[in-house]
Length: 132
Image (cartoon, rainbow, N blue to C red; front, side, top):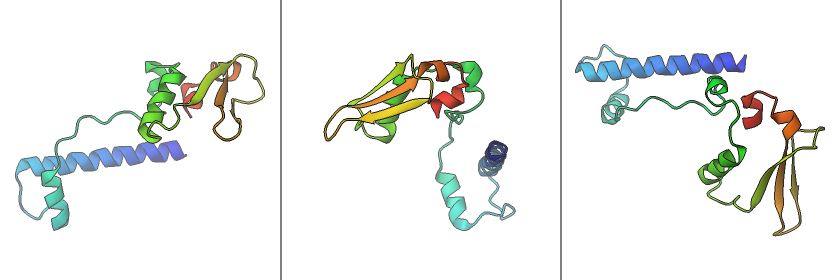
């Protein structure tokens, strides 16, 4: 249900963006479009945005990249969301772990932090499960 709601929200946002950009580029300065004055100023100053990128868990990624490089994704997330603070964390596949999808172990203050992912469980699952 949440996925359907999310897709509907994306469609409505795209429709709204298209209507606003069509109104802005048409040069129509009348008040026929129900936007506040502040919103009109903001929409005129906004640059045209390129096509929106896909969410990391978007269903179309199943066909584009069904088995992503987990290490590369971890490094990208580290830079994007954690400002490089996780560079000392080890991420690796565990070929024998079958009871859970992954384990994070930490050894004391300043010790090694290791994330082990279950190869038998995650290699056969959909891409979304691996990414999340």
